[in-house]
Figure: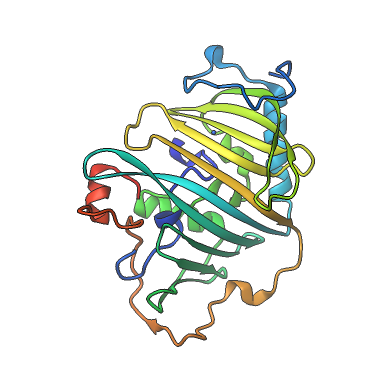
Length: 293
């Protein structure tokens, strides 16, 4: 896999998972509370491989991989370059449900065109609620197959792809240069109900430094920040997780599109980069400039 696939959720929410079918196509002896610690966006010296950091990451990965079902919400700040060259952040929200390795549902909104994605192990269905259009294509296989094919054919991957694959730890440590356990922080969850104690890690893979905050009790990701070190077209990303539900029953129809709105069926097309329109700059122009999305 490409090093750019190593980040959990370091990819644009709008275009990487699903898009409009016509036009939308981040030391064991560190301080206990690290909320005010600033970790510079530079590689960790000496190729340090902190066992505590790796063990924490492995436990998180195993917790997700062993779950029969996974459900979570994500809030993402995605950088997009304006016509004048300035970077702005767009805000995206996602709801994700996964069962085993052959069923996936995701719904994305916020500053991006709303769109739903259904995968049942046999077909992919993409639905645009605002346009009331949908498209279907045959795609037999697993979620691993789905992610690999999207990256191979489109040069992109799915958001939160690294926690959806069958072996998250193997993907996240591919090409790993350094890993460091910083300490513990208390984060406010998406629900706003109390704080969540987390283990704070910083890792470096080729070309990217990323930080992840993992729940100390539930071993689930809570926050990811990434900085690309040698790619000006991808500066940094921040994504927050919440609403985790692990190994709880999921209705079978969750992964099957039901055309209750009488949406029109259109030809399936590959996703194209798109976000909220910025005056004078089309999605294709932003893609040409290397902007997101």
